[in-house]
Image (cartoon, rainbow, N blue to C red; front, side, top):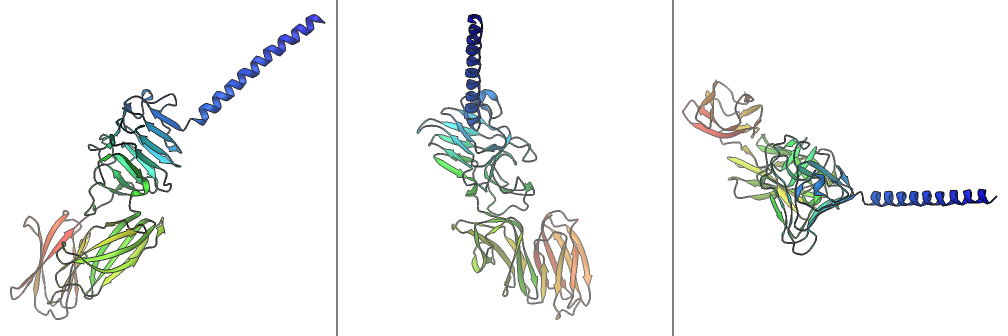
Length: 383
């Protein structure tokens, strides 16, 4: 009986140790799991190098609801593409004075997947980069096309570069042609103290903007690929592309993840070249300008040229009062005659000139009457 009690006592002691060990394992597992989304760079080096980070290792990719910190006196070089979602924050620096930096070099990448970039999901305003003091920075001076920090609207399908070099806008994962006149990068260097939110970008992505002349009026049409909190479009007109005046305002849909089409008519265009651009305004008052489009107004001799810019063809509308023979010449910016055609009794018709095979650039479309009079139009051809 004494022997049996002794065995039972030994078994009890052994099981107690096993339970204690299991409890420690559970505690450690819970602790590690609870800290799995907290990362801290403690050594200068590459983003993907384990030696750069503390015991929690390299930040997960994508990083969902992560807190990432680059410690004081540390510089981390971004060498991968990573996505921030669910309220992920990157804190650069830890105190009020010590330097810290995120460096973004040139990857030579040809897509978001092969670039050195951070794609911040715009659907969550707490996806952000925070620079703690005046000695902290994000440096992307040498960054390439797909390198930098991006506001990500649709998993790389729609994106706007917030830090890095031009181009700025991306549609269908590719630079959006042609770049807007203010298409220089938002910034290739960001110094602290500052907070960069994915929603800092103007929440309107313009995918198309055209101007065409029809029956002596100019029809403007544009399409947005994405709208978040947008308010309205201001339609601006100029005859010299330098001095602008407002023609009117078109209300925006406000919120849309699909294409939205808009139109506006200028019923009184000038007889020369008419330039148009859009002021895209959100509900917070922030705004940006679209690219500039141009169209030749109807001249006193009854001619009109459209579309301009052109892609596949250029139309020349000939007024009913044109009764004499005339010739058409298309001349490149280098003085080369690309085509020449004679027209007889063209009044009241529209002549179409194919231009899809022409190199992209500025051309002179010259109309020459039988009396030697000339009318010259500037035509921009883009592909």
